[in-house]
Length: 432
Image (cartoon, rainbow, N blue to C red; front, top):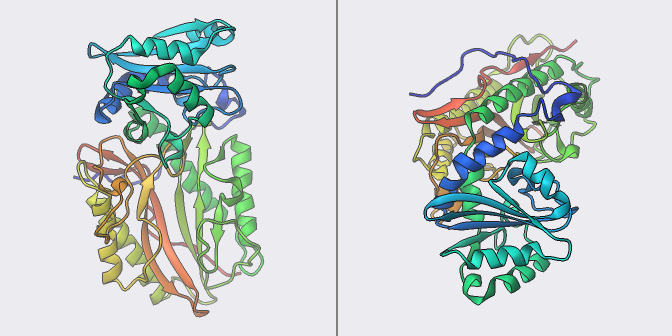
């Protein structure tokens, strides 16, 4: 049975202050340690690798540096996660200048100090040669930016240190990173739940500021930017495109323009925040600007809205452990066809968590005979997604307009659960 939260509760959010990044208030260090100890071994087994090697350095660090504890690397450091006699181990070869502080953080089980005239990569290579390993994952050979942080110069030095036998066992970390990042701990889901409630509430507050015929899309976006600044949170994606407020035709991922909002407009706000400099949200809320004399949306707009919700509900009902992203997308596409929606270029949904488009299954390729691998991998409990209910039509100008009401969910043992209650009705804005 699906779980649907029935009322919007605004939580007391501990990150609503300039102290959000302080060590005593930031839950990330403990959550990170728990993720390494509890989730990473399973991810490595799912990826069928015995070891994972990440090289870190100052100024051009690996995208996953904060996830493993090497965000403060100076000179080159090597982090290793590996199985030995079926036991999971974590080990870092760190320049001596950072080794003490790294050990104090207790992220890994062991920190080996590397002298200034020695090479962490060479020491790691020598150590790996002492183990019996079948597969060594490295952050390379991948289209996923989160699993492709190894530079060419680092790769050359690494292969020189490993030798031919171990080089033949190097594989991409793409599957491992996919398995590890896609699943969130319960504590992380709760943080995202609170942040999602705030994201949606601010959008409703922004709509309350609109004066039809005067307010521009950019001014609505500026209101949300100020809310973020006041709360001490940051952007979930590119700042110039967050939030994206669109009262006219579809603009995809874009910046808000100086278009003046008019009576009869359907307004889309796509908005996300980042809390603790780690977790992000991705929520859309829609409004309709009533024309003079209207007390509710006209029949065509009401039909488009109800059709979008119907697609959202179909996608939601298709989410359960073992289902594929393709099946979720297919459920939505069937509703779009039945309600005579124009086709849209966007996927039904995507993983969300550490970035707006995170690693994990993609809700896409529902009508494809050759779906992407990401669309065919199973959903698992703990995975978090943002997904849309679509309905698209043509405006009187002949340009496309799409309702893409976007919500966030977590997969549970029993199905899907909304992080916050979904939008049920259009926000109505009266013309003055």
